[in-house]
Image 1 (cartoon, chains in turn blue, red):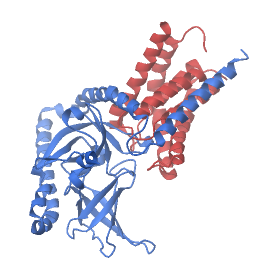
Image 2: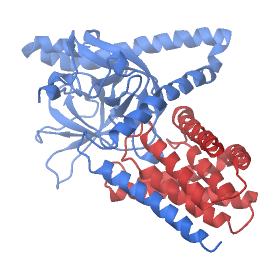
Image 3: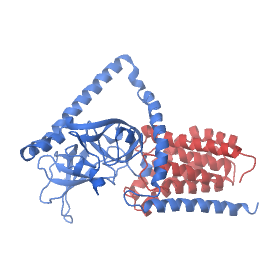
Length: 292
Length: 170
């Protein structure tokens, strides 16, 4: 019996050592290659479909109230009207930027037109908990559907985030309100460029901090912000509505003025999202990275 | 052989728990916080089987939680916190009987230690998004939610672990 505590402590020591080793291996990685990644990929390949199935089983329970006659009809109509409304609003929001582009770059204006996107529709099947301090979700499409890292994810309201990793049947999406996320943005009416950073709020809708590159320009309340876009549309395509300026603040210590952006997307109730795989027939996959 | 089957059942339990936590309880989150079902399993293991076994279960459960999508943080952080929670809970438990108040106390302290250790490793590693204010907001809600689910989950898992318990403990 006297040897018990010692054995016990040795076991604990081994496990703690294993944890610290894994943390060290994984924390030292650059953006892409981590020795833990193959393991992560294997677990994702097994658990992705399981999560997918669990979400599918739960859906009828969550939708249960919909299964009553009159209420159902009204709800359907309401959903339809909301979808139409959301689409119209989203087009309207992109108009500012489109008008500006039309003059100089008529071709690019099409990018902001929702009809030009090739999308893979998908459903959110898992959400990261606040205890993990990240805002990520899993969706039920993967490399089998042509979804890979660095693709833009949108929904009817606007920009949702980007795919950070994908397995055959699931993908992980980093939401733009995560504090790790930085997005290029453009003010709808003045076409000024800036950077949007997530505020890292762990629940609810979240907000974004927008800092302009040109510090002589100040954003106005109510201005809309659309995505700036990257080369080949990876990780973000251009002209997707992001949010509206709700508050402008400047401090004497900082050169740039920052604005708080209220995102159009309701991040607390994400359900159906779309992964943009091509804009006007041109693939948005990360060709830039392949060429490197 | 028997040990293998036991280990298999515990592994299935862990996978089911993590799936429930990620896919289903995320719909019932309280200000973003999802109940730590995996942590409850680790505490139940500690109550029945003692510190060493609980630390091992904690390691596996934590690692699955670290690697399962949509996790995007440095792997090993949940594993470390669950190992510590499992071991600490097991040590405290061996001093006395498992009664309802003591179980509730162990769940509360376990949730506190687990969430705090995870937040602390995040601070040490300078993971984005982790700050003291955020942790202080999340920890009490996590403790409360875990306590809320204790009467539903712990008795079931305790029963399962008691059934699985071999004659001698290691």
